[in-house]
Length: 435
Ligand SMILES: *Cc1c(COP(=O)(O)O)cnc(C)c1O
Image (cartoon, rainbow, N blue to C red):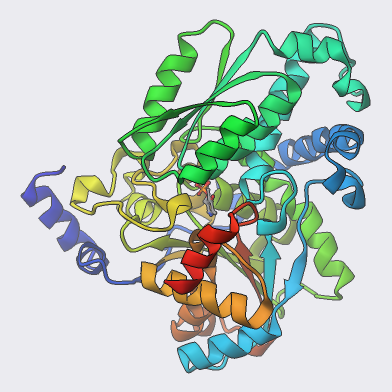
């Protein structure tokens, strides 16, 4: 925890900090947001294209091994749905007209892991497996992974151990994929992780370690244990280029989905995307990918719980991963387990500080109300973390953001990212709905 005078200094320097410390919902516009080409990044367009090519090499394998991907031709992708009934409910809830169209990116329906973590987590495991298989001479550098289910791959992978620290969903995605490929896999779960997630992982063949500390502590411990093993590989959610790239590739497929629906994104038709943010990898990677394709015409906003505003505090102060919410006296206690992160990723925050348009916070009670509205109006069931995006359009419309940029509100398209909930058991979902 910082000294009282240091916290006072931060409040004097950044007036919005007073509201953040009082756990009041805030809306912050990023003063350092710049054009992609004016930014300085450790990755470029070429990396995103290469990542997409790696996914493509695996599609024959997915089609064969995960039948739920057959319809998608072996791609791990989710639908983009227009949610008019939810829009009506939201307009009543916020007593404001939502100008422009509202879509939901249904990552709760992503195959295999039922959350946005399928994008980053599975990609990082695929990348690691490809490197091992290529080095062992089992496969050529451009070859497809159709033969990946052959026994010689499993034999090779079984010598290696994958570790990951998680609040739940990343553990699920890494655990399920690693076990399927034949790796040994250890998942280090923070105290927020739900029992059913641990049970499911054990059932899939992962070893689960339970911690009494939060996400950062589970990651620190997992990193130490995994790196002590010469054949260990740690998926580091606080600092991972591969997770980030895995998330970024959705941009190609989202563009296709928008094209198919005849939705134009240009100067006169801005695209607004609202992304729940934990450590920042998923929203940061998606933002980076979207900026590659849509440039200045896409505006990405992150959403965090009022009790876990880690990216907001990191970017507002410029301290990024050098400050945690606990350092300033905020408890990181939220029912949105996927967002229960006290300190942002160093890798992701270095991108987002240049690309995110803004960040807002939301109270836990609102998350549950939004979850119930979505279930009632659209029959779509998500987890609490996944609803944080819904207040975004109203935050933006109530601010001067669009006015300052001379945008016509009715020509905007709003996409709320539903980041997870696909694997939530029925009884757990009922407690969400009855809360
Ligand atoms: C992990 C997660 C997020 C946020 O992703 P980060 O990479 O941690 O920022 C959002 N929603 C859900 C459901 C998640 O599991």
